[in-house]
Amino acid sequence: MDNLPSLSALRAFLCAAEHLNFTAAAEQLARSQPAVSHAVKLLEGQLGVALFERQQRKLILTAAGEKFAQDVHLGLDHIERSVQALRNHVANDRRVTLSTSTAFATHWLLPRVAQFKALHSEVDLRFQTTAYDIDLYKAGIALAIRHGRGDWPDMRSWRMFDEKVLAVCSPAYLNGRVLEDPSELQQHTLIHLDEPHRTRMDWHKWFSHLGLTVHLSPRDLQLNDYTTVLQTAIEGQGIALGWHYIVERLLANGQLVPACQQTVVTDYGFYLIAPANLPLTAQAETVRDWMLAHGQDGVLASS
Image (cartoon, rainbow, N blue to C red; front, side, top):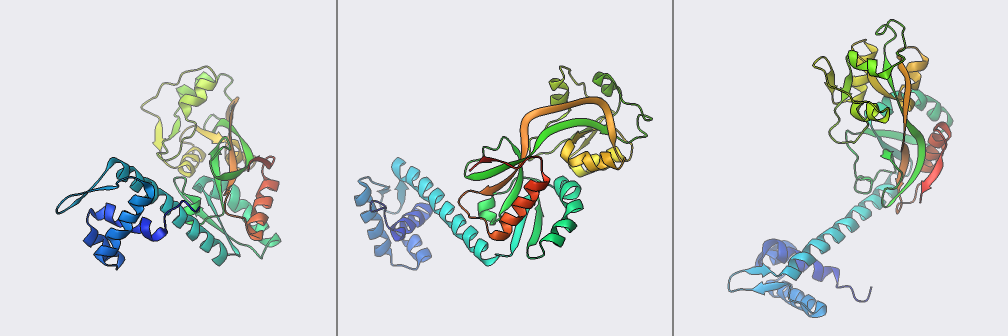
């Protein structure tokens, strides 16, 4: 730590690097131009390398200066996000926000949330549904659901569900039949999930796991929201892929049925994750423990 430059010197350098002008940097920092110039000169002396080429009317970053500016900006941005996350953490001690997809919130969380609130009225549980995986540190969010192998950098993760995917449709779509040969699915309308911000199994990968190749048909449907995909299948417009933990209630109440006998299981899973460097509040631990108790196993995948 003794070898690190002062924060004041780093801010002076970043402003000068942004404007390529000591006077403009001084105006932004509310300091004098000589003070900014002197701070940068001292920084160069401490580092033992020139950060700028000083020409008559402008500054030019050296190669070392350009690289250092990128690294300092990244480091200070990370510190700022961590500070904000800690402030949010302290300010919202009772509140616990869970980031998740709309489908998970609709089909897994909402049917269970009344039970949670009855057991834990002291917790203000909130959902943030997004179409992409957000930065939990920057947003100050305690918990999230993620699809993967449980190996996210700077995150703790607990496996909730294995990835099990089957073909599903309304009971009336196949007139109560279950197809024995999965290749027969291609004779029907397949509902495709075209989700731009998350990588998920699609029909191509599902058939590939079974040693088959899918051929797209003009009658197939392309949708970009999984909740809409499921509703379209419920209404009898085609056959969709169903992640078991999402469709289990729809299967149990008869809104959907398996279209064929095969289920594809991958080495991926769905995990509850939390920022590793942000301690969970007692309320967040309550949410975590409750979710894992209702998940598949709750094994700690990484810490």
